[in-house]
Length: 283
Image (cartoon, rainbow, N blue to C red; front, side):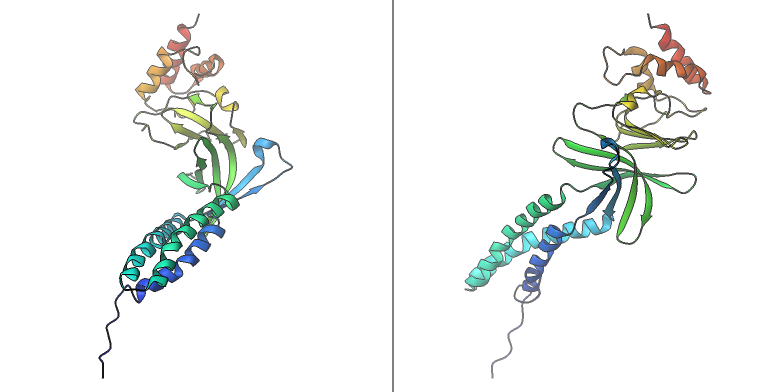
C-alpha cells in the first residue's frame, strides 16, 4: 500500500488562490471605488452634487488582493511546468493578462476614482473633506461635507469644485505661524471660512459656511489673503515676506489691492501692520 503523498502549498492552497484570481479581477473591473451624483439642471461648475467613496481600508484590501492575484499565478506556473503540468502552467501564466484587462475595463467604465485626501472636523461635529480625482494632467478638486458613512462607504456633499489643471486659479494667502507646506491643507476659521490650500500657500478654493457661498475657479482670486488668520494668530513669515516683496505683476495668485485693504480692519494687529506696509509700497 502506497503511503499518501503530502500536499504541498502550491498544489493545494496555492492553486485555490490562483482559482479565485479571476473573481478578484471581476471585482476590480465592475465594482467602482467611487461614484458621483450630478444635477444637470445646475450650472456647469455646480453639476457635481455628491461623491461616494469606498472606505480606505477596503480600497487597500482590494489593492493587496489584486497585487497578490497578479504576482502569484506566474510564480505557480513555473512550478507547474517543472512538474510537467503544462496545461495548469498555461492557465496560470495567462491570468495576468486578465488582470490588466480588468484595469482597462475599470478605467473605461468608471474613469479615475475620487479619494478623500484630507479631512477636518468642525466645532459642530461636521466633517469637511478634501476629495480629488487625478490622472496625468487632469485633476478635479472638491471641498465637501460628509453627509453619511457606514462600514463600507462615505458620502460627501460637494460644497466647491475646481480644477488643478493648467491654467490654474488660486490665491496666495498668509497662513498662521508654523504652517506646513504639505499637499491638501484644510483650514476652518472661527469666522466660518473653509479654505483648501493645494500646496505652499496657494488657496484653490474656499467656502463661506455662514452664507453658503462657494469660491472656486476665478472667484477665489478676489478673496482676502488674511482669511486663514484669527485675531491672535502669529503670521507665517515666508507668506508675509511674499506679500511684502512681490507684486501683482511678478507673482501669479498675488492678492488684489482691494482684498489687501480689508486687512486694515482685521482684528489682528499683526495683519493690520502687514496690510499697511504693503499698501504703502503701492504707487
